[in-house]
Length: 491
Image (cartoon, rainbow, N blue to C red; front, side, top):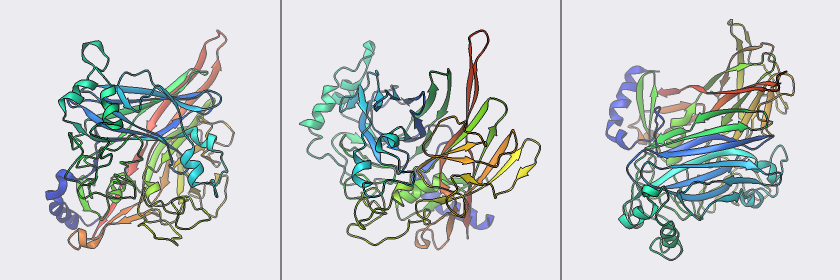
């Protein structure tokens, strides 16, 4: 990287840095990305989000299936100051459900709600997915995005959702009535970036989240922190509880409209201990830029009784490339305009938009090391092996390590890393084939090239020891967030 040019780019970007989207390494933000939920086998997933501020917040909670990022549950959550909301995703033998016993206000009211395959069926009817999974199977694993839509400034509404000394909100019906026949019902979407809906101010962040994957039968559990993104929506983005918006592509209403100044088109990324500030033509690119990684690193262990799975999730992929169907130009076609980039009426697109220009499958190379510096080269093959190059095809992808059939998640979205001759060590995934290039005119004639793909995830290891001679379960879980290489060229 040209450090002189990088420094110049930093100086040029200082004026916009205050409104630049960025990943907060301390875990607080206005957008939270949860890389994985699963209900496979005997597992369920606990979800938690915390409001650390003294403000009352309107928050969008969205559960997304893992094949192609179709929304399967979406609702609004209204959090009083210092509030916590929790839920569990589980399978009851027939359906995948979200259940909460939390008192925080939601619209609509939520206690136990099945995840819905409606969008999967509507937009994927003519071409399901490479694994031919049923809609019911697709609901059983995926990821979450939680977005702050704004701060409630109406003292009446704020008082209604406050828990007070009883630990129960004063009156959640105030929120629901505001949507059904009150002042929010007449303008359910934000239509400008400067004029919000009634009594909603811009998001301020201060949220953090976590997920815990629990195997109740085998007695193991492990948790992860949600990836926290700051300063994405810079104006109110309060949307109807029944809407698929706002989303992390910067869309805030039907038709893919990006309201002026509603979502940041500037990103801040730390590379080589310097901040690279980049201006983009679209907020989806700004969000992707702060998540871009050319390399993903983590550990594995395959000692006796131990299994390792990696989760690799592309949270913005849906905005760039969508599952192909037989009918070009429809919302179920290769691109989904209201969720991403396709202008209204545009047809005939045959490939994805950068960084997912290869389409649905993301190519990768993997190098595996043991703990003594020995390595297996990048010709390691996945199973199933369906192309001349290794690739992962879903929005959520699971890599199972080892030649046997053992796995942590028993995922339908899995590839198996076959050539793992070492018992333990670490591995490197190379994503350098993808790239995202900022428009020249947006950065004073300087080219900003981001290598890789927007990715989040973790590795989970389980010691599946079964039951001891004393009748005690000897199963344990551990989870490790991925480490990333950021590659940005400024020239």
